[in-house]
Amino acid sequence: VQLQASGGGLVKAGGSLRLSCALPGRLFSRAAMGWFRQAPGKEREFVASISRSGGSTLYADSVKGRFTISRDNAKSSVYLQMDSLKPEDTAIYLCASRQTILTVPATGDAAEYERWGQGTQVTVSS
Image (cartoon, rainbow, N blue to C red):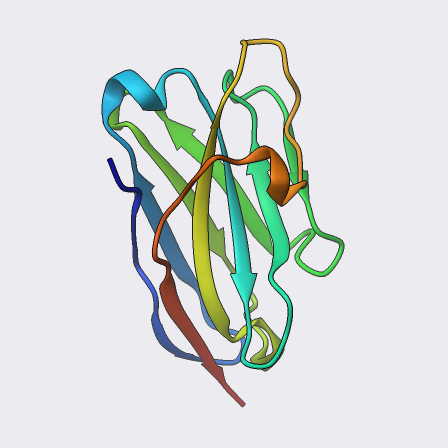
């Protein structure tokens, strides 16, 4: 079973994009979800995460106030709304999932996620 990320593209600085990531329902309902990104020549970095219940979210300082993570359990999908995009946001964005119990808060530790998608390219021009 693979995670399917979509919604990337080319946008000018200051613009917006909305990324989506889907996981089959049975797995999604038991999963906390996260978004990470990797720019050319750089290490993968945490972007945002949301707990299984949706009650806990976590953001990297670099995106706080600009990006919003959300989930729709009825559609078995997690979203990343990205506003006020900057050229330094250019990267491949990856979604990841981890099976957890309901009360576990969101985490930015990549090692905690056991399932990863192939990613979607986001390019922000200046």
